[in-house]
Image (cartoon, rainbow, N blue to C red; front, side, top):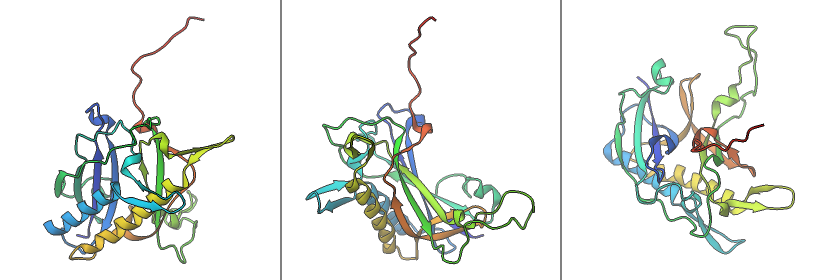
Length: 252
């Protein structure tokens, strides 16, 4: 077996409905063994620090935290749920998203999310910021011919080294409005990228080498992340949108 893990954070909605929870996931590479209890705690702490990371933005002389930009629809009374799943990279069922053991290696409550800006209403549930990241791409082509089954779509080796996770739902504090567009504030993007860097650094406290990684199902590898970024545009995760509760009709 070749083992890797996925750290999973589940944020509860204030309505308590499972289908409205928000899930963030981070792939982890580590030596070919199950992580010890102490190292699982290191991963959990890194996840907590990511959500509640505070960054001082010199241009505004203020501290900003990832958690305070998470909308009020996410519960501050119910603790986020941390789970660690372990997979066999050589198992095709695991590559399709099924954990090796069928259940998490570890599951526990995390520290509560910090309070949101009380004066800031929430954006629609599906609005998010995309935290993008990649592994080393030196010498790796964007596209190559498909040697396995010629005549079909081209292979995209670089895409196997890129990943993303969507941070949201968000509050209106995150937006910068001008006459021609609405974009995320620079300090929001800066704080989120710094939180990502701290997440990777916090994993160094483990007794073994744990790296935040990009999981390639094609290559059956988890490669260490070397760069993370946030673009100056919001993303939409339609699957996070609330279902309609009523309908307004008009006869025509």
